[in-house]
Length: 308
Ligand code: HMG
Ligand code: MG
Image 1 (cartoon, rainbow, N blue to C red):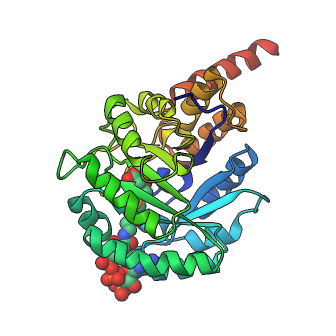
Image 2 (image 1 turned 90 degrees about the vertical axis):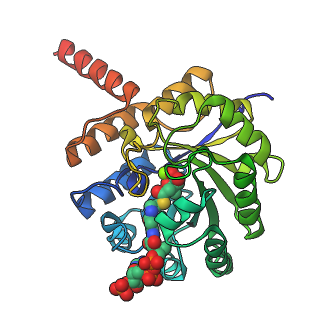
């Protein structure tokens, strides 16, 4: 399978990257982060969640974030909606895309959204339907597609099953998510080879956390399966509240560096993203874990200091 010539990078830092922060990140910082990311060329920014603030307190200001950002024409601003209440929030906030999120593992489904996989799909039926009626895009995210923190191994057939159920709900895009970053390239290829049999390849995405340092290798494996959409988080921010020990998503700067090296078009300005990674890490007092981001920052600073 030929590698794609261009990919879409969905920036999930403002949501997946920040949702696990213990200290409340000021809403103004969240707004500036989303604005700067959209200005750097991301066509799709996951900006907020409309979930229970009891479950994820950091995302409680989703409506204020959505009301405060500048909307760039053509940019898709996505928000997470676990139920009808979330959908109502998303519609009121004029989100472009809602994300329904389920899991390929029963145990994770219970921990993350407090219901079984089957119950979650039932709950998503009216959510997806109402979103479609309002003209919103619908994305489905399949957590634990490459392994589960509670049940361990997740059969490929379970991932295919959830993808088929999401497809039946009318999802425009479906994310194959490695929530705890345990996947390896061989498994990644097996899973994508299977799910592309039941859902169009060009509407499937890879959402890799980098806990075991495999995310870039997994992206490369997914590219070999012809996958054209990848999620990433600036500065590698993040971790999942319901997956202990899981680190953030693969760092966006590292993914852009990889794509640039492969000659694959992204439409995103890496230098700007490196600055954004520095801005958000400094703002929340967390180390920047992007390897490319840190190297490019150091290079830019040494060039600046030798120019004066
Ligand atoms: P529940 O406790 O079973 O439901 O939670 P509930 O209906 O009893 O609601 C509990 C309370 O939350 C009630 O408030 C509701 O009103 C309120 P109370 O009456 O006690 O004062 N509530 C809400 N408030 C605001 N917005 C809402 C909402 N819904 C209920 N939409 C529920 C069930 C699904 C709501 C809960 O489990 C939840 O919100 N879970 C979200 C968990 C989450 O956000 N996880 C992280 C995102 S997923 C992720 O990171 C994975 C991903 O990145 C892919 C990957 O890497 O795997 C996408
Ligand atoms: Mg995630």
